[in-house]
Length: 384
Image (cartoon, rainbow, N blue to C red):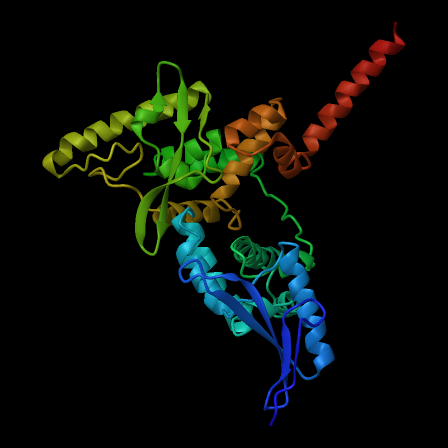
């Protein structure tokens, strides 16, 4: 069959009809830096008009410097590459979470789609289906974060032109109501932990607001008894059965000045640990950790948490979590008159606005105290 071809059709390039009946347009995207030869690509379509339209759009993007060569990678293949090559700066716990999201949810639903052909409505349908299956809005938001980051990297290196996840709508994430311990529960808790092997761990959590990993990763060089300060710059984490030190949640260290009672608790911990050291002799592990077992080894998250749950169940609040000790500290601090900026810095939040957003609504006493202050102000003004 004779080949029908038109050169320099609208937008440049060449168009011909193939022996299989399809139309093909060839265009040049530049020269190979190694050989100096022109690099040509093809566009296919059912009709000459269809191909000409595609060609014109492509050559215009080349002329304007916005051309992106279509990627033949599938979404699944790109996600594997992204996880391997572009997530080196992630904390191990975060990387594991991303990998789980990719392998358990994203790849089964979107992995077979060609990366350059992925559309916003396909991602949106995936989110909607996940919500119908019972995944929480927070989990769907996390999945979106992984997809968006991976596609943003693909845009940056030129595999795709735009990030299809930009146009997706996410379900609204409702903030869970925090449940700090009230005064009666705090009193009951303090009584219940008296003499417990992890009493001082729980006291530090309750009266500093430190996270569990921050407490278990605390070393003696971070305690300044003379100045009465604690430096918090890392945490003890566990991923895939392995314990290691990791940076803080927001990668920002902080130095807090706790109540003098907290420093007394730490001095007591140092005294008891010194006794353990002497008894253990050469068996002692020189980890320099503040909280250890009787031979100097680090404490495990699960064991500390398991004992906490047992205690909390016995005092009638089985739903309480270890993290609620941190919430309790924050609310008590605000109730006691600490300003939001101070509480924010002590907790290590990224902003005071975030602190107020989380805790500002948590205490009826704060509202009543505010009303009482305003009442005193009004009374004073009226008596002038």
